[in-house]
Every structure is written in structure tokens, then in C-alpha cells.
Image 1: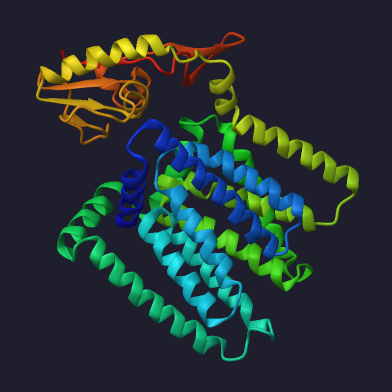
Image 2 (image 1 turned 180 degrees about the horizontal axis):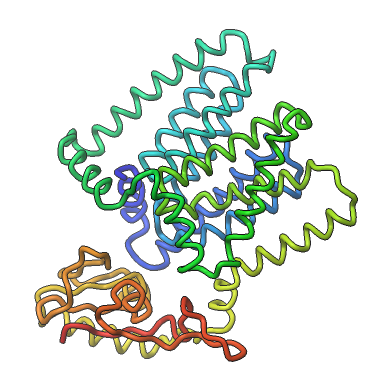
Length: 400
């Protein structure tokens, strides 16, 4: 989306396009997300330790976003939700404005932002301090912020509405699916691509907690009830409308489970057992991050520097080169040759003498199996991990 490009471009203008600049940008956004999410959860009535654990879970999930725009989109979204908790006109206007910026930063936060925004405003109706003229203030601030966002968006695309529509329409046609196919796709992905026990148990617990909420709906306070309903609605809508990116809303699943466990009345021994089980699930769920960090081969800087010289020689003698994220960061340090296509997608031209791929075999083996590339799989106690490479920094050349 256009806002992300402008914000990122401004950062590179000031700090330069290099690995340290990109990593700094990412981790500043991660830190802001943790702070804003933590403050928002505290304002929603969650305890200090539940808010801290949920923020930690979101931070770990953010590592899987990489350099995608979702992290920055969530940053604006959390800031907007915090502003909406104050019923004053200026706060409402700023909140709606930030939520609009979040959507035009990453369209994948759209369903989550709209759901949480609606419930955030709806919970104000029973607050006597915020209720007077609330509807008028909400409507006015929403309209004014929408007009400003529309103006900023128009400038960001240089008023090229038709070209923007064509791109969005292409994405909808190629990257979306029918509502009836969403849940089967997610279920198939959880069972076939991931380890079935990695995410599925947490989703099952989420469904159990959601069912309990509706059965015992009168047992919850007004604030907790609407907060939990907002989480269920956000996850549900995101599943149906953005099934290809369903894991982006996974932190909301964890927040609901943690909130649910904190409010139900069970013996303290059982609650401690539940905490232990959830901790084991969390560690297992992120075991691929721990294993890749602690057990895979480290970076061989000398070999990569030598490979960079060879790669630049290749680029001088061919029309076009294609790199993936591994090559972009660890070989070129994001300082590509001018004839580089820094993307590896299903629409990327196949490797040839005029279109040489300098890529990770791990990426091509999973996304382009027709090229028969292979990589050394990570092995532990005699078991191979299909989604982990023993040498995640290995680079190959295709098309020569």
C-alpha cells in the first residue's frame, strides 16, 4: 500500500539503504508495537502480567513478518485504538486518522482494524463521562479524518485512481478466494504445510473459549465481554476475507485465550496446569525460530563476500538477475546491481541466460519445485525438518 512506501522511502532518505538501516527500522517498529499493545491491553482492563505476556507473544510473531508492512500497519492501528479510548473530539479524530493510515500502510490489517474500532466506539455508549454528544463527536471526527485520509491517499498515488484500481483488481483476482473456500484452505494449510500440532491446538482452545463465552455471556463484565467479542469478530472476519494471511491475526487468538484463562474461576492448581500447557504450546509453536537460531549453521562472512564479487560479475554479463530475501540481505546488503529484480514470486520470469537467479535453494525448493533444487534439511535426533535448512545462508545460481 502507498503509505508504507513513502514512510520507508523517507527512512532510507535519512539513514541510507543498507542492512543496518533496515534492521534498525524493523526493531524500532517492533519496540513501538510492544509498548502500544501493552498500553492498549492495560486500558482494556487486562492485568499487567497478561498484557506483558501478550505483548511478548506479538513480538515473537512479528519476527515472522520480516520486512512486510504489517508491523508498521499494526503500529498505527494500536496507536489509533489507544486514542479512541478517550471520547474527546481531538482524540477521536486522531484515532480514526491513525486507523486510516494503518489500512493504507497494509491492507492486511483492514478487517482487524475495523472490527476493533467498532467495538472500541461501541463500548463508550455506557460510559457516562464519554456519552454526552458521543454520536455527534464520533460521526464528525470520522468524516473529517476520512476526508483527510482520502486526500493523503490521493496525493500518495498522484491521483492515478484508475491505475491503482487496476493493481488492486489484479490482486483480488489472483490472491483472493471465495468465502466458502477460506476455512478449507486454512485447515489444509495447518495440516499439510505446518506441523498439525504447531497451531491447531491453539485454534481449538480458541474455539472452546469462544463457545464458553457465548454460553456464559452473563458471567463477564461489560468491558471484558465486548473486548472478547471484538477479538472473536476480528479473527473470524480476517479468516473469511484474508485467508491467505490468516496467521497475521494469530496474536489475537493468544490474547483471547490469555484473557479467558484470567477471568474463568477454576481451582488454582488447574489454572497453573493450564499455564504450563500453554507455555509448552507456545515453545513448540515457535520451535522453528529457536532451532534456526541455536542449531543451524552460522553465517560464513568470508564466503559470502567472495560470492558477492562473483554475483556482481554475473550481473555485468547478463541482462537481468533475480534475487530473494536471503541474497538481498546477506550477499548484497540491499545494495543491488542496477539490473536486479529483488523479488521472487510466481510471476517472476524463469531462470535463463538473460534472467539469472541468485537465490537460496531453500526458497526455490519450496516455491518452485519444478526446478529440482535441494537443500540440506535440519536434522535433530534422527528426524528431518522439511521447513528448516541446516545452512540457511546457502546461495545457488540458476540459469547459467
